[in-house]
Image 1 (cartoon, one colour):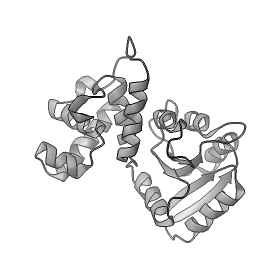
Image 2 (cartoon, rainbow, N blue to C red):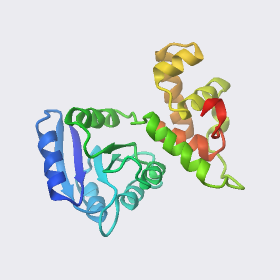
Image 3 (spheres, rainbow, N blue to C red):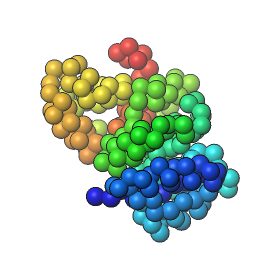
Image 4 (cartoon, rainbow, N blue to C red):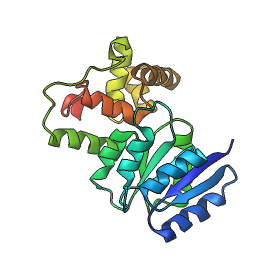
Length: 224
């Protein structure tokens, strides 16, 4: 199957560079470009991409607001990869919270860019330890909510699934979770799929955000 990609960046040279890389891939089709978030939202509705490469800092409507407009209130939608020049971009956490499936630095090597697109198009998320630490740091920085909203689907999780969710929130890979929980990777994948379905979240990134927002894990738990 061909993965349709929309490239969103306010710099034409950046868009041209990404297009050149992606058009050399037989399984990827670039369906459009946009120079700001507003144009991106309109282009996404017209072209229905599978994956959007979304810059954060853009004029008019930035990548964060565009991500919200595209994904807010939707269980299904395009997978959004946030593009940033800075590893410590303050918008990364908010973009993940808004529904993005991960982030990439703009100087990511071409082969990693292509792999990232295939990963998120397949329904997974780019959740590196760096991203996980950033999510944790953001919750440490913010005062705890006095009253958290009800957690939809949380009461549907089994004790084992809740344990796996806590391990996901620590940023562990399937292999690391398997070793920690003394089960096979196949079993872990099954648990993860059920957790995402019950919590009605899009991917592992959203599961991590969910876990922290609803107090399932906290900074300091299990060595975090």
